[in-house]
Amino acid sequence: MKKLKEAVFRAVDEYNKYRSPEAKARLVEIRKDRLTIDFEGTFCQTCGVYDYLEDFIYELQSFVDVNIEILNFKKYESERIRVVYSLKGSD
Image (cartoon, rainbow, N blue to C red; front, side, top):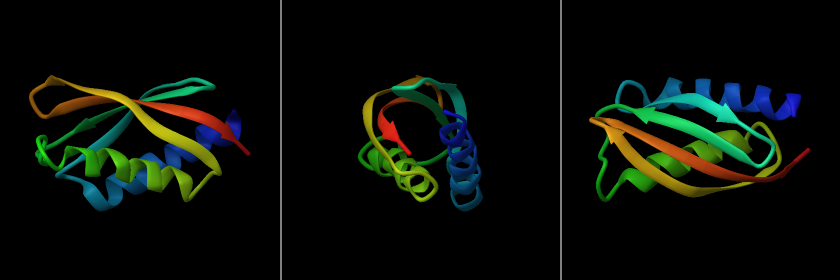
């Protein structure tokens, strides 16, 4: 779990490095089987939103071997989306 948590923090930093200020990720919660991330910014939140949310998956997988997929996401404020990812094993 420690390795996964470190990888998530690195992935958030890397994601923000290349996508901020249009999109910025923030860790909300990490569990053994689930990860919750908030995304905030002026990025397209209609047809292109899934691309921004999937980009986080690729960043995380560059730091740790994990099966991750989007379970659900919801816009909860103007320019803010909360995403729940499913985690299935990490090394």
